[in-house]
Image (cartoon, rainbow, N blue to C red; front, side):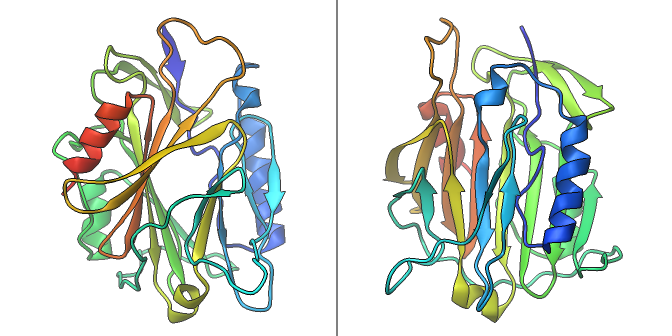
Length: 278
């Protein structure tokens, strides 16, 4: 059975409302999906800035979630992860990091976006050491992208980071995504997201992540490298097919940088991938 990878159709970001609306309009025009996927709601990430609420948007399918930064009464745990308003156990602390600004023009809002042909090309230009995996080889199906305000944050996405035993990749040009055939171990490729805090102001106000909709928290464990890892799993509201493999999400912080691995694999496979990142 062939499945179409439409992950990261819209990335939540730090941007002005007008820019957000334009991005949403452009992305939603291109989304094509099954009715089943329309019931899925992607994770939403929000930046918190002083004296202002930055609205964010995220979509998987034609469902749009709008919201703002969460403010607790009296205090707020920085960089918290939530699943449908359930605050997950605290991860290791995010820290201030330095990168070279990508060689690309900023838009009118000061945001730089750039695509890269490989993960190694991205790391080399940014001049930063990031975790990698032995199974993540530079291949033609990897899609690397950075969005950054070089003074505050950087958000890196690497679609098709690890292919596993998936096969038969074909580019869907109108969506800039790949279709593929699932394997026995990997029902989808595993993608990577990396969040970096670049400025003191952003560090002071944190960076929260919300998973909304059909998700539930599985567990926190300590990886082989000593990282605290939160595992999240998606759910479906009907009886799944016999061969269905749910999407697993592993979130952890290493050297002050937050990493998120996402893919339709078993919990054991996801844990093994995290434990062998280096």
